[in-house]
Length: 272
Image 1 (cartoon, rainbow, N blue to C red):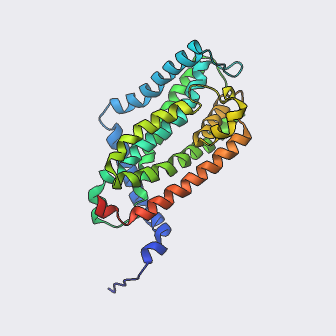
Image 2 (spheres, rainbow, N blue to C red):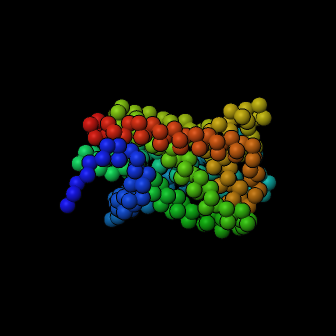
Image 3 (cartoon, rainbow, N blue to C red):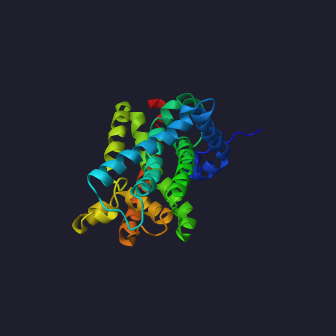
């Protein structure tokens, strides 16, 4: 057997190695899901209770107290929950990914594989939570006798967009959390702050025109509005200008997240 040491091979074949190690991705993703849900009730219950209680609170505060308007013929609770789905996906992905490298320190320090696999695999947990939440959404639609339109067929596109929107910031924050361990305390604040500046408890239609450009720079605005447009049968309009700006921001954060992650990747084994 001949062993060939080739300078720079890892860098040149990095993206090919991602495909070669796809089985490792599957193993890590399945392990994270199993740890979350196997032999436990709180995992599944938490995926149901958290978005449902948040929906109730936001419906009372924004719908009953503040009396913010909802699109015509749309129950406010359904409006909120449709916006809660992608946001909960984003928040869960960010939280799970941020500690993923530290949680796999033994694996990272001993075996070579593209480290990008680890935080990406944890996003699968957020995807499972999202699928569970869709069951609640279906129950709410039956309760309100609300029938979606053909736009529902495009929902998988926006689920994929939510995945991409979550992945970019997750990679960046994951890399920062390896170097600066106290950065994990910043993440809950960022998630909490983002919840109130994103159209989860309100419709994007209430945002004044003069703030629309700044508002559209939030990458989750287009994703949430897209979810609502699909789920509510087009009754919640999707502003294409804001969506286009948000899409550009999502692509930028994905590029930035991958770039920063790759820059720090060589030092992960030493820092961990």
